[in-house]
Amino acid sequence: MSKIEELAERVERLLLRHEEIVRTNILLEHQLAQITHERDSLKSRLNAARGRIDALLERLPGDNSVAATSDSGGSER
Image 1 (spheres, rainbow, N blue to C red):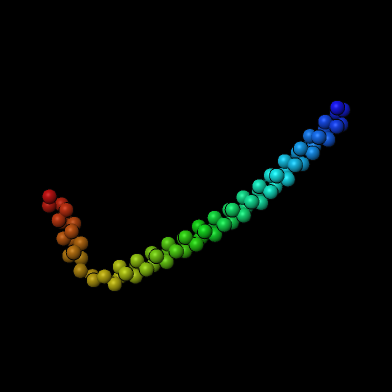
Image 2: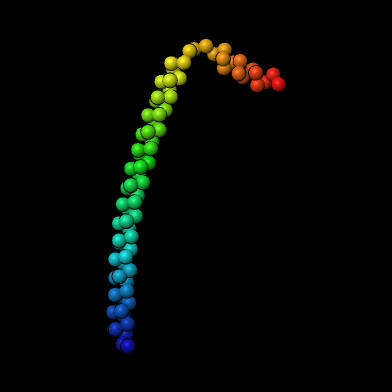
């Protein structure tokens, strides 16, 4: 096999490998976009849940004696 044929063969293999890498990159970019969207959605849900919890906490009676009783009950042992 001549040097030119060997070089042409190597170039063909490199081109095939390049195409494979490009396809893989496209798939990875798509996967990254999906995961980023999922992360953003989960962050949004977490913030909404925090808001609901904060609203519920604000509705609790302002009597701190229950918390003080449970705190002192644990330390009396």
